[in-house]
Amino acid sequence: MDLHDQLPMEVAMNVMYNSENYYVVEFPGRHGIELVDKTTGRAGFLDGAVEVKFRASMADLAAGEPNVELVDEFLGHYDALLMNSIALH
Image 1 (cartoon, one colour):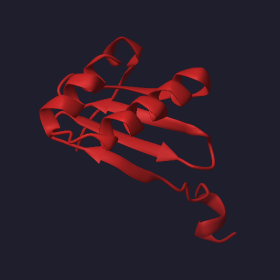
Image 2 (tube, rainbow, N blue to C red):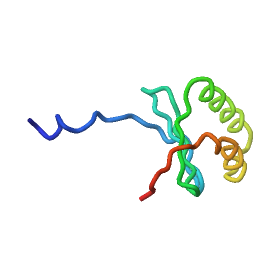
Image 3 (tube, one colour):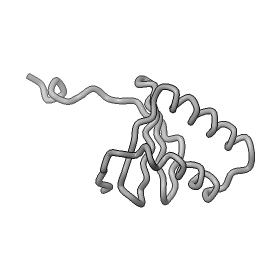
C-alpha cells in the first residue's frame, strides 16, 4: 500500500479574511465557512441558514469601505457560535 492511499483526500479551501484576531475560510465542497477567533483559540463551522446570512452580511460589509476594526467587530457578533477549541501553531 502506498503512503498516499493512507492520507485523507485534499480539501479545497479559500481564505475569505485573515486579520490579527480572526480567520475566515470557506470550504466550497462542504458548503460551509469556518470562523476562527485567534484571540480565544475557538472556532466554529457555519452552515445552513447561518452561513447564508453570514455570507450576505459579509458581502454587504465588503460593498462599503470596511477596515480591519469594522470587520473584526462584525465577526465578534458570531463569537457565541465558536464552540471548538483550537491550537494555533
